[in-house]
Length: 225
Image (cartoon, rainbow, N blue to C red; front, side):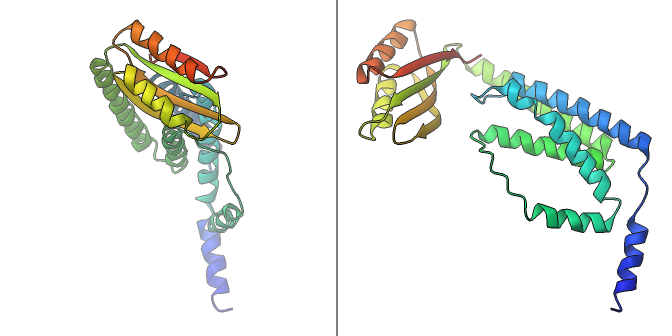
């Protein structure tokens, strides 16, 4: 009971009125930075999913995070309330690409930085990260020979050894084989690879041998660029 007046006084002192114009400016800045990040992800990302579609989530996530941080930093009571609310929230959306998770963290970090009125630090950090991503992409393009392709395979499952057989076929005809994604259930196997070929004859031979494994197998080659 003795600590109750102290807590009440602390809560009253912690609460402050947020300027409407600052709020509007931060919302606008959050939107701009999230759109820039979305463009970077769509252009330089390597996820096999629809990157443009996924990048559309950056805008609401950034602005919502900024709004939450702006509200709770002005009130100790709201901060404690947020902790209680988050303890009962469960996020069950599957993140199948680690790259998606890293961009989501960056999106949330932007919203937190703008919400905490650390605009300059946030902008400088984001530009630095974008510069590193750009330099890494240039270096990667210089190392590639332009004949790398994304290969997606969908096949009914039979004995559970389909993935090993597929990899052996690809290793026989490809200069490079990297498994990027693999999903399997009792009825269907789906796998995505980044593969390299020296010429188109190797591609045709690998395609023919893969189709010979199962008549129902679906094969799709996508340009890496």
